[in-house]
Amino acid sequence: MPTLGAIADDFTGATDLATMLVARGFRTVVAVGSDALDASSPGGGHDALTGADAVVVALKTRTAPAEEAVTLSLRALRGLRALGCARFYFKYCSTFDSTPRGNIGPVTDALLDALGAHRTVVVPSFPATGRTVYRGRLFVHDDLLDESPMRHHPLTPMRDSRVQRLLEPQTAHPVSRIALETVRSGEDALRAALDEPARADALTVVDAVDDRDLAVIAGATSGLPLVTGAAGLAVGLTGPHPGEARARPASRPGDPGVVLAGSASAATRAQVVHALGRLPHRRLDPAALRSDFDTAVTGLTGFVRESWRTDPGLPPLIYTVATPEDIETDPPADAEPAAELVERALARCAVDLVDAGARRLLVAGGETSGAVVTALRARTLEIGAPIAPGVTWARSETFPTGRPIALDLALKSGNFGGTDIFTQAWEQLV
Image 1 (spheres, rainbow, N blue to C red):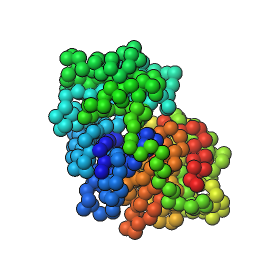
Image 2: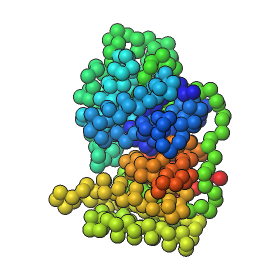
Image 3: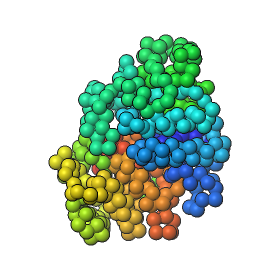
Image 4: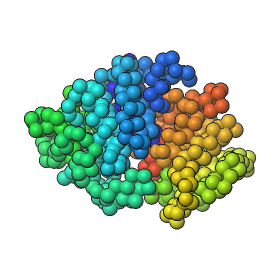
């Protein structure tokens, strides 16, 4: 029976955290949406959930209206409690992706209230991916958050690096901060600082610049019913099954694969550019989709199927953005936003290609991943081989056209992975 329940605000974040938990000795299953927690829900997967040590619920709430994000997160919390979970982890992006209204603050407030708790920590640090917090400021590698490419994110532009200042407009709780010096003094010192009366009702941003700091934070907060942060905070947790084997691949060497890249982040653009000279590729054009959606999608899937016939060893790449010039800046009046159009098109591509024989899918972009997994009607993801920090293969039984199909899925945050991930990820499926 699971004892640790996590709620992730997007699908790539859910697999990111699940990968960390598996590495720390937790048998971990990702539940795709709250409905997957229901034993009576169609599609199966409940036995895997009850046999896990930790369950991560993958939601698509990062950019949803705040009220919707709260409602879905509370539904996930109720499902996790019904499974037996007693400790909870609200997982958001290590770059603190949010708007001035949320959704990090509103969801945290709602979870605390539902648990009858009053305080928690805010720990977006994930040093393995270059995200650190020092003096309350969030860094992306060597750059402050507001000087990194996240400043120009199309959905959640981050124009302040001070986590406390980002969070204060989003929450009804006071927001405090604990400096690195206190963390470096050890668990007892940090626990004492968190127990100070001034923090009895606070969300406390805690500095962390390496994994040792995260281990101290995890130890000092072991008594809190809720922690919040990026996947890095899991570094300090210890599960009951260290060294347990990960899920085996669902596919076999040579099975058809495809890369679906919907992210416009700088990291994904570099990955696309690297892959253009190495993989068959076709760009998804929002203008063509608006002109004739069905014909444009059919052209993309036809290109992939022909590529499989020509060279079955190379996974074709369908992408949206390779350079900043590819980003649509002046859409037609009253037109469907390009981001939503791309998600819908790539989700449709995924369903059609799986029906045509694809058994390995690498999806880039949190919103795109959510759209694809939802369209495939996946219920659970069993975590498999790691690809890069924050990126893993996962085995999933999907129901794209009503019949069960086992797939290997890799859901990659737009900002994660090395430049060669689109060409090298397949080597981990052995």
